[in-house]
Length: 318
Image (cartoon, rainbow, N blue to C red):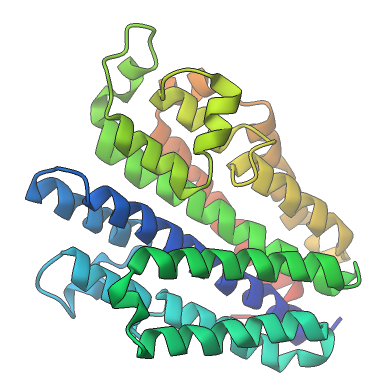
């Protein structure tokens, strides 16, 4: 496969996944903002959304105040923000159009229709009337795109690069979400909260973290007890049967990298396999004792390194 073709497929899936992840973050923070809380707590929540995407500085260049209206405008419909849902869906559509011949008709039409329908919803004020409904729609369209790609495309290199882009982006986002939200809620007391005598935590905000990655019902099924920070961290990091966990993402990433392996990619595959092994054989008590923040920062550095390796080995050089 031509490296340019692989590049378009890889980034098409990354941008679609990024649009979904942004919608998830905004939806959960919007729902949480409706709960009784102080103005400072609400502002911290919206600042956290910007921090997860590393957009605090870019937001500050355009807006003087961090509030729900400004952050949602910036993260949903601002064409000057490359990580806004609008920009991500446009980039996904443009990458898909560039490799139209490699996609099935169903996948191209799904991607194209998502872009056209999203613009229509912004113009008729659907977003202002019901932000939650628009976020759910974005998540649904991402699910549909992913399902159509797996259900209609030949299982060749085209599909493998789509899957690589999806799970690389998902791993990055889950790690960012964990790092920012856990630091904000648990702070320096996280280690103590892993004990049996842990203090009562804010149920609604911890459950919001789980809902942001569709893990609330899964948590109840797996642990069958009150929501505890250490169990949330274990579920979203080390459980390979949790679809959006770090371990599950790395399993899929390594499997698809092996299917497109070439001679230059041996080092990238080795690093990806080593990161997967660290998660596969890791224990949450060991991670918490050495520092969750340090572990996640190192994980993000290693994921970015793997992404750079994939670009170097397979894609158009940056």
